[in-house]
Image (cartoon, rainbow over all chains, first blue to last red; front, side, top):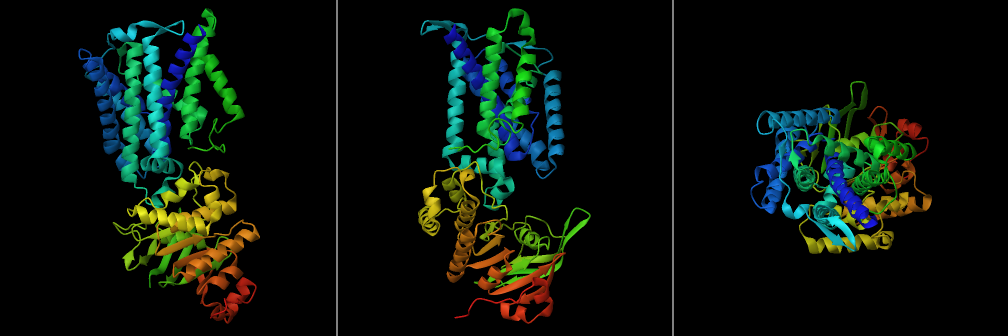
Length: 291
Length: 243
């Protein structure tokens, strides 16, 4: 029971951390609260549906391609022309992109939810240290864990990562040192696309369907997780997302059946308490070392 | 002149006219200071020089190239800026901050040599190389900011209030470094509230009064002969001892 819960909690936490990291990276580098993040995720999930008759890894690969393509296209067509605009204008633009993509999906390929048959090997359950665990949970932990480690390596050990972190902290000062907006902004969108793509693969497998509005909840999770951890700290945002996922799993497992329907009420009450104590988020503004 | 600022006006919004027709020049190898009281517009002038704030009118040129013109890049012109806020990236380590100063350089071996040079100039940075920059004291952060600016091998170093809020011993250290850089032939534009020390180290100085106008300019000796300047400063300027 404990082992099953741990794997489930770590898996959901890692997935939420991925979602949160995408939101926080965009906010840090561009000052953009990107509400179209959910539709980048939708693009990935739609690729999983489109390639549902191909081997699973083909669909997963195409999900990354679709998500990165939509992320880059939104940058080029919508956000690039508004690069120097007020953050409120950027936010409204992201709403517009979100609604436009959602509407296009609804009018064309996704007028209703489409089922994605679960990959047989993901539906299996195996025994791990005496516990009966679903392969999907293990894959979620593995995929999200590897992605988070890769992002940590990219951000901490590469020149691009250092430039992204600097730009996320103080874009103007970074530019004065020679960090090029035309490099870091598209790079941030590519990373966000990859994170959303991997998130969409996991979400599509967990939900077993894809619909035009499926990006809304992950986007909200990303925003809430980032606020919880601290919008100005990528590490804090990932921690916030992880905690949000882990606590969600905890509530799903241990809440009495008749209270399960109120899970989000408990979750967001806890969130409000945390934010009253630390309004800047868990790690933002804290004196922590990043690397 | 390496840097020429001609009759610039800078506005913040519709109501604040922060700089009103200020001109100054900096020649190659010169250390020029800009002194004046709080709110005189000194820092705004530096921001305009670096292209951080736009000018409403007037002209700023660096080596004949207009600042803010299409294709102008302060980094490509090797202009390094240490803002009043220091601009340290708190989420990066000391080493990462320092390396960021050379991000546009391709000569990796020389970059390593320059890092070594700056660590010798500021030994405290070697000690805290792997430490998060947010953990440094104000004086240590200022040393890091100057060292990072020097990593570009700047042709013009622009320093905005480098000793603001620092302990006297650190102020001495910063001025020692400024003099050392001047002796190495670096061109420096220094904004400083500590007028006495600024006049001591500078070749020439501009005394600025609100709202962004030059009251007087020249060497310390020349400024000492200007009653308006002496009255504004509240003391008679004494420059460094010429060799």
